[in-house]
Length: 281
Image (cartoon, rainbow, N blue to C red; front, side, top):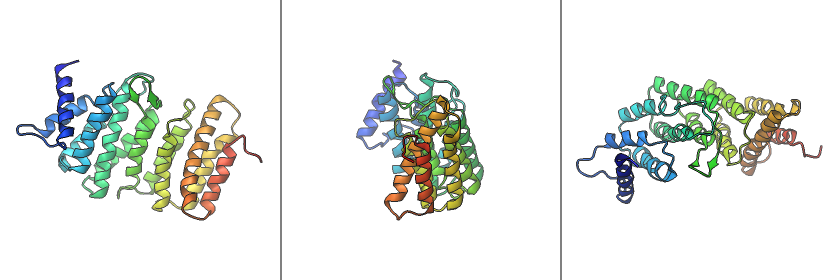
């Protein structure tokens, strides 16, 4: 264990005890540089329990980072050393750097949503980066016995929940994000089993709740999602069908709990039934 890493752990533990207040002579940017350096550390104690909470408090709770610093941080988080670090790799520790770069992006976008400060070019950069990330990330594992949470799809979904609510997010952005959700559900390789479906459902639930797309357009997308059930039986078809079924169940239960059944919830229920090969017809 390097001296720098050991000192960072001790400093972050102390910051947690002192409500993330810096001592005299300490510089916030020095800490941010170290947080970025170790953001994908294989030890979940450092990565999950120390680095991420520090970002949370400094970005959201305490507003310690200036708008200029946040814009700079966004660029670093979405570069080839962080969100796209060894992108395309599978089943190795590089996933931690990529997926834990998503989480502070979500925090920055939430702060922007609450009080806009990003330029249109900044928003477009983040949107493009996240859509590319969902397209190119191959390591879809959830919780790992060695290393803890990878959860790339769930963390990416958290960013999209914020993106769809930003003032810059027009209908074209919403459609691009729906396409990204379908791509990851129909990934042909991995059935999600760590509640990634719930995190993905949060995106579409938010779109519906805020009226960001028409019900007809969402119904058409849902029907398109369920069309995988019509494909010839194969392992890849089963993965798409099961992921779509579980996602649609999550979304249906959220929408059905607060309102009487309408055309959109009826479409969801029909799509769930279509994807469920055990349903009695």
